[in-house]
Length: 441
Ligand code: GAP
Image 1: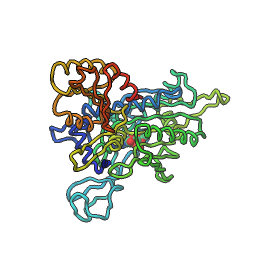
Image 2: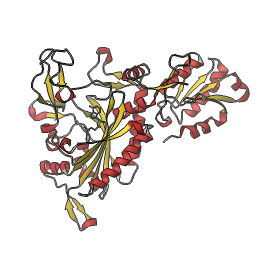
Image 3: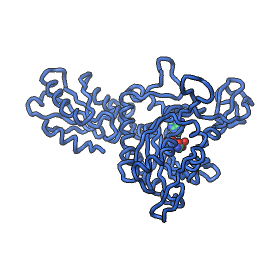
Image 4: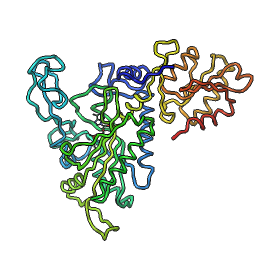
């Protein structure tokens, strides 16, 4: 049997649209740049990814999870450096009015959009934050920003969490939430969006211990991606050169994934020093010192190691990794999503061989029984072969067929997505079979 991995992004884009994973935002109006909607299967998979991250990051004694608001006091963004420094260098093409990031094009080449030579304006800084007005009166004093990262909601709650949960250093605060950036260069499907979701954790530590904690979190985060079924040779580290570090960092490593567009960033692990807390202390005038009882009541602002990953980029990497085209050009050609069973949006499909009352009766009863534990699809339309192919394309690990023999022997056929092997299992053993084989995490 021949098997090909995903060759180009467009095959995945068309599968996502065809099978209800991802749609363009406001599609019936022609779409909205770099915004996407997750359909029924996509929303399900996205939630499973978030659940996997939440468990890995907060089901531990030293990390608390929170959920903070998207709008924050405007001074937060002054303190964090985003108002003054969160910008990309922008150039316009004077001929076609196309806009480009200067660092993503060759400035001496013709415009990549219209081909005109020497057509670019001088680069200028373009702030990536979206803003809007809060309250009934529109003036500059009511300007608020849509957060460009979730991290600041964590920093401003450091004291609240530390005191209410009686935390001692080292400890972390984690959250999952939407972030917004008015990106200049978009495209590549959900790789770079203007509205996206982040899963971030700030780990508060004693100054001087950041190198050790960077190593520990690097290992934990790398292994999390492997646990989602990503192959190790599709991941690599990209250390940031010291002259390329963000304004807040004294060290940074990206986990890159081999997307169909090439190697690119999936997650960042950053040593953020005490930059953020120190700056929030200065702007808010609130004392954010930690009193270290384990070290003679010494007072200091904790250092921070941050892990920051985009949900959408995880989604993309998991889909790219799972996609297979088997037996290309042959009668048995199929697209199959070899998702880890714990991430499959639908765990089981139940298929009575024919729409006949005695078969449907058994199928409906089984559906009712196992739906209590798993997301189950009931499918009666088309030939069995077509129904299998439909489930393969969305990554359903098991299909259960009820046929006329089931009326005689009280057993059903369970077909495995990856091997396509079929086993006969007695109806009263189906729940055990699924429990053993789906290994939910
Ligand atoms: N708090 C640190 C921070 O936000 P970042 O490297 O700017 O760091 C972290 O972003 C992660 O968020 C990235 O590694 C990526 O997975 C995701 N991300 C950032 N911008 C994105 C965008 N425009 N679309 C989708 N994901 C994005």
